[in-house]
Length: 135
Image (spheres, rainbow, N blue to C red):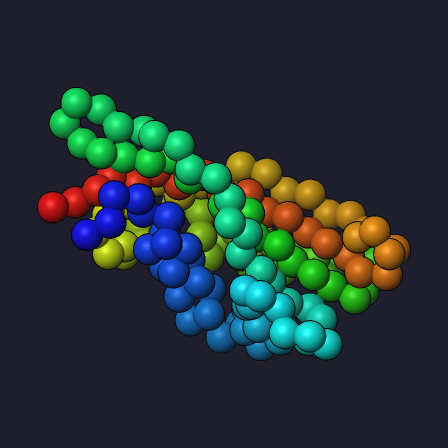
């Protein structure tokens, strides 16, 4: 068993998103790292951050996880549509984790902008999750 729930949480999010045929039909994939020359649009799941959220009777963590959406469309509609789908799939879900229990997964932030080159649209969704280590 691991003390930190980050990897199992990341895997559960990846599994939830890749199991959705509607989302997967709209993107070329979910990557870490992105293969060279991959077709847009696609998603990446950022590393995020984690901090202690323990109490005297449990070991817990609070996680901030960013999901990045990359699009070649000039307008922001594709990023907004994909962001809405991802948020629908994840918000409030009770994902199954190995060695940990998910006690909350909530959307906290969305941003949609052009990446540095002005050609690629970049959306960021942030989620807050709380996990408790199980025995």
